[in-house]
Image (cartoon, rainbow over all chains, first blue to last red; front, side, top):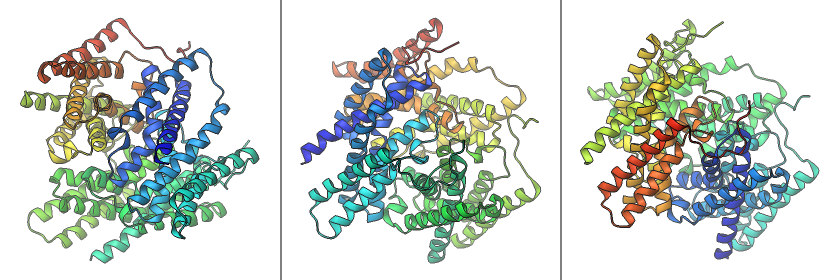
Length: 205
Length: 205
Length: 205
């Protein structure tokens, strides 16, 4: 189980690095700029979680994550230069990455004995802060805050479900898979049926 | 005294969460975006202070702060959706929040044996960084850096006054109240009489 | 050697504070805004490095750095108000600051037993994150990410060279000087001959 999570975690890092490099393409960044934005996108959420919990930062201890982020960034850069990629192609892997990062982040916070609401927020932070950093570095309003198709919402629901299930005695492994399924299902259904939360001001025009 | 500070601290968290949600309204954020910006505004300054001092992050240890920030954010969101609020109504509670956060931050840094100038900056950081995060997340130049009516300046003056008074032997409690009064008085007088600091380039037009 | 590095480090802090204040001039910031941006530019890179490595933040322990950053910021503010400075005048001292920050950051990470690729990234972070914070606080896309004349690239090459030389048995002192020379030479040559890395989209017009 742990070995599986480790490998899927590396895949999620790679997917996030790719979205960072894709986004940097809109801003005339050069190779090193794109790589650094890709690394920040891939590792940013878990980094903020580890700093807030006062843990060792995961990629400082095990540089495999950094190597995967850099290698994916490098490959993505030259692939995109040759032929631009359609962003919609990555929404499915990105949803898997969101689900996985959220559940890993929540589990780590629970093991650290964080209070339950804090633990759920750590899951959300692990899942979405990489993309928030990417958008700040590209000087955009973070996408995840704008009216969208249940991104942070799906993450939070899955994290709370995981915590609730563990609380009533369901095993951590089953709770984790169920939590991941909830994040993924909510996100995919929201994309399919354009489900949104209320916004303060409806989009005009 | 400590119990009083705790309760007033929760009020300051609530006021800051409200300003975060209000500000997110200008950017078509949805409920979750507004909540997350509200939480970042309410808890951001103290978080950065705790990370810099290598303390446990206050809201990770005691999730009451997070609950207050989320509940206020939720109420604010639906109140503002029903009827937009006039920003000027919140300048007075916001000035109280600034004074309180600044003095709490300075006291914590002094107890942590930070050098005096560092301690005063920790007060300023606790007081203003929440608003800086809010403006960065909303993709604006942080208001506190623009020519304004003595915001960070009032905080810094109060923090330095508190430290000076403790240094010459005045009791911590009296120094704290005096420091808070100085932040508040400077900020309110500056708003009333439009006091400003010099700027590098005067506003044009 | 250590004493020399300490003094040159203070000079690099001063140069970075100056560039922060200069940049804030484009945004109508007032004195306190310019000072805070100057401090963030001067101390930001080392702060992020120390947080990631879980070290005591350097300027919280020794407030000399903060005093130098504030004093330089204050002097710069009034000097620039009197007569605007030409940005190009600071590119040479800035290149020295980049080289020094990068090598100090890499050395600190190696002493902290960070893995080699992580250590090289800590050098880059120490060298460039101050400027990234400055640009975020001024609401610009960080300059260092845009197609430019080998800024982060020069830093990374020097950091990797230092690590490689230490690995094959060259003394830390000689490796440090050589690494610094590489950063400086690459950056100055790139400015002289307009060397750039490939970008995702060539600048138009």
